[in-house]
Amino acid sequence: MNTQLELPELARRIRVHAVQMANRAGSCHVGSSLSMAEILAVLYGKVMRVDPANPEAVDRDRFVLSKGHACGALYSVLAECGFFPLDWLESFFQNGGRLPGHATAKGIPGIEVSTGSLGHGLPIATGMALAAKRDSHPHRVFCVLSDGECDEGSNWEAALFAPHHQLDNLIAIVDYNKIQSLGHVNDVMPLEPFVDKWQSFGWHTVGIDGHSIKELTSTLQTLPLEHGKPTCVIAHTVKGKGVDFMEDQLLWHYRTPRGDEYTQALAQLGEVV
Amino acid sequence: MRTTFIETLTDLAASDPRVTLVTGDLGFGVVQDFAERFPKQFVNAGVAEQNMTGLATGMALSGRIVFTYSIANFPTLRPLEQIRNDACYHNANVVVVAVGGGLSYGAFGMTHHATEDIAILRSLPQITVVAPGDPTETTAATKKLAEGIGPVYLRLGRAGEPVVHTGPIDWQLGKALETRSGTDATIISTGAMLATAVAAADQLSEVGLDVRVLSMHTIKPLDTQAILAAAEQTGVVVTLEEHSILGGLGGAVAETLCEAGLPGVAFQRIGLPSEYITEVGNQDYLRSRNGLDIDSVARTVAATVDTKQQFRALQAV
Image (cartoon, rainbow over all chains, first blue to last red; front, side, top):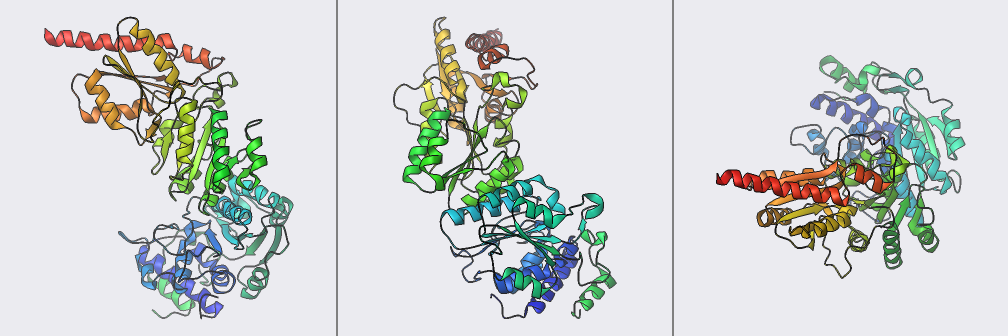
């Protein structure tokens, strides 16, 4: 538990920050941040053993955001949890600012790994989990992937590796929002049967509602789900969740919320401009 | 070099539990002893170099000093972005080891010729690039890299490279080793071309040319001091590498010499043409077909000295 906020409120704030950051920065990928707000809220607010006052504690759980383009949400949850001041969020994407448009670990407390090119996070997380096992450290490694990046073969290399080494301290969570860069996943490169794929690779895999704090919490609170196996959570989500005109719209992988759209988005998220 | 490397690493692993070897399912008959003695420090990542490199980074970020191991281009070009974004950007203690630098796997064909790796790898920020000249250098280099000095590319030959340094050496990272003294010309060699460089220099001594040989085992950071000293003192610099003529040792030395603007220095690169080798043959055969054998190297050095002398004669007129 790293924040006094109730989890729905933490998720809401992640969304508000993500929209505000995109607006200030004129940046994109807001839909990708909105789809994983509850995932991050539950991980940072409830599940992970991390301490903002001691972000490099040896026994901390590790978090790797493989979908580095959704860093707006990650920066937001870290700031809300006190890893760094909230006003750092204002420097997102800005000339001379601290926070670039893909997750960086350089000088940002709480971020373990810099990502941006897809398909990098899970192998790194797997290495961290393997090292922890070999060194008898109890911490877990959580990795959030996008659905689109599951096109990358490197993920499946790691997916083969982790079960063989019985890395039950490794948890992959796929933010399955069904939209990738140029279209719906089902049109571009279908992943189904997605749970079966991970399962057949040797992961204990569950499909859940990735916006249900209750389901996320009950799934992630009693890890590993199966002794000796890595866990994969296929979190069914909606791209742009929380702002009706952004939901399930490819456009909001790219578009910057401005003007009325910005005002409406914040209003729908319970924020008065 | 391969055996020397593994034996050295095995010794190091015994005294430092951080030293870890991750192979991409290669090293038959070579890595077995390490694997059996240090199971917690050994991983076979399978034929999956992208995961191997990301995995190594994750382990390095968890406190280990990780050597990834495969042959030719498999541990370098295949997971190049993992080396760039994961190992190098995080300044992780990941040593990428390629066995079979250059044409070591000659008759195995083009896929197994590592001939652009130095140029590509040395352009990455943070990385150190090392290509030892012989087994003695390999031991010294491995010891240094196992201290954990950040991301490294270690380019090795394969097996059976001759020992050039028969006595003790003072091997220092980033410092060229003067393997043979000389005042008429300098051959700057990297990797396993060292033996050829020394033999060519010996041959040239028979026709009265006193040729210095530098083993430039560290290509990045480059020992610019030794290069400039050689240029000033011998006036003729020839680089020798089992690598494309583009961007490797020759390119790096050219960058140094051109920017220094030393007057009257003759410079020549010896390397492979920027072409895929389609001829079939072993390492020696392919070297000789591409001007990397002792006679060819000696001829090229002599011709470069001639060019310089003709130039001087013209200047005198």
